[in-house]
Length: 263
Length: 152
Image (cartoon, rainbow over all chains, first blue to last red; front, side, top):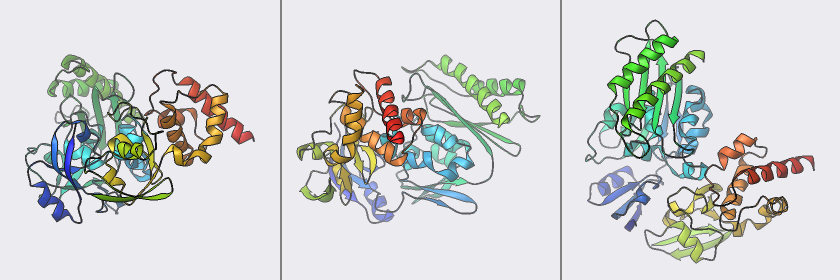
């Protein structure tokens, strides 16, 4: 059972950052994963008073505050137009509406959870993150940072550059953690594929070999899927073996590319 | 620490521990419709409305309700009455253990989307697990309720 000695609803990011540097202090997101733990938290740092629960739009980008709920991501018209519904598709399998009203984008991204659908989608969209101390950086770079670095994630930035996007996942049963997640995007000549729940955290794979340069066909989609599945590292857990994931990976990428092509 | 919130329309001030969960806070104040189920944020039994939004009270700190409004089924008797009576007549209610969460989330659904399709009902209620009766009865019951309401 999780125990918390002190709860602080911070008044500023500086206050949150200072508190977070101390041992056994944690920043609360939706608290859904944290609550499953058995540890002892000294101070729970709540960002909910800082106005980070808004999705802001500029001409170039969407800025998602760290406390934006997954449900807000799911139902936001602009984000779903930008992603052709992939934003909603990426979270609609996550437990239920009540859960998604609590779970936050910031919690999903900062946790860099292996099972994260959200991380998979955002990686394929060339998202950037804003950290209070370290500043702005590509999400892919942040995802690779050591977890020991304690910073406050304030925003996730999505560029509004038009692109085709498809999100697919495989689950053993509805609302369960995914066995594998796959997000594909196509912008100009660039194809980006993010594969998550390997079961390690999502990673991005490009088309460095130019397999899709001539366009997406049944053959090129199959070849690109095989190429990514060959490069990606998979592992086994209760939900599936590494070999099973490798097979599923090829199926999801091929289906995703063909769906993207059909538009 | 001290919190102040609106609970079912009444102002409540209380002294709580930092790690008091909202479900425990509510049950201690007589809101026994809020059931303790899985405690892993999966089953929907503990659903309450936080500022009108359905959330899992087993996964929210009571401290986070400070300054907000919480509604449980005890506070929504009037709004729930017609629907609950209807699905009971249809034989579509769940047992008393899962039913409050199911009713709370159905209320939230119908506030947000008064005329949902079957797929929208399934999607919205996916986070409400039923431990004994299955789901088809509830779907039929909600569908029949909406049809009757729309015809009436």
